[in-house]
Image 1 (cartoon, rainbow, N blue to C red):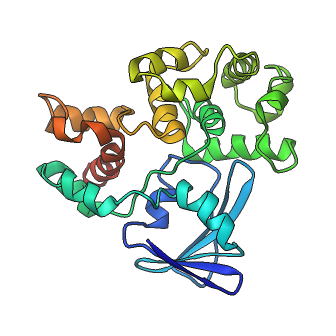
Image 2: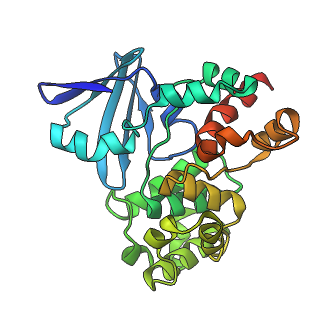
Length: 269
């Protein structure tokens, strides 16, 4: 990744990024595609840090109205610019199916999200579609003056008071997650550092957090790249291409591999 400052913007050169593939693939829900004169433009937020970013052509991006310190201290990490995705894809391509998946959607990057925001977002995502997930999260942020609520704020709510979200059965799960996090029964920073099986168990002690949501929080909110969310599409991948198990050489970064595979299997089904 190379960058330069131009006026109030940061111009980034990075071949292993595609905004559509990364921001609209179901790993984060606060990004919206907006009309622009560029190939694509998104506006969104990481907790309460707002950003508008455009893709001008292959490998070139504009981080609008962003100073250098903010770019280096926040967005470099969020977009995982410190990881060499070309090398990751080269390693993955030792496997025939992963090679095809990387060729198909090679611009996906893992977004390094906030663990609290990620936990709440994926509790909301259960048995839900992306437009509705985004709508619920939009209503949550609107209720808190456009910002994602902190733990102490959300812990003052209950399933009834969360009626404005129109989130159905998920409201009681949000109440439990906020209550347990506020009381320190759940400490996300500590969970992020636990052995992976212990971390899974701790997350699943929250009402409504099952295996898939736990894996998503570990992968997207805690950057545990060995976490491997399994939904109906990935079950199909495993049954069709890996009946003997996922390749051992890729398991440390299985969660990143999963992102390529998820896009690929949907495209050929």
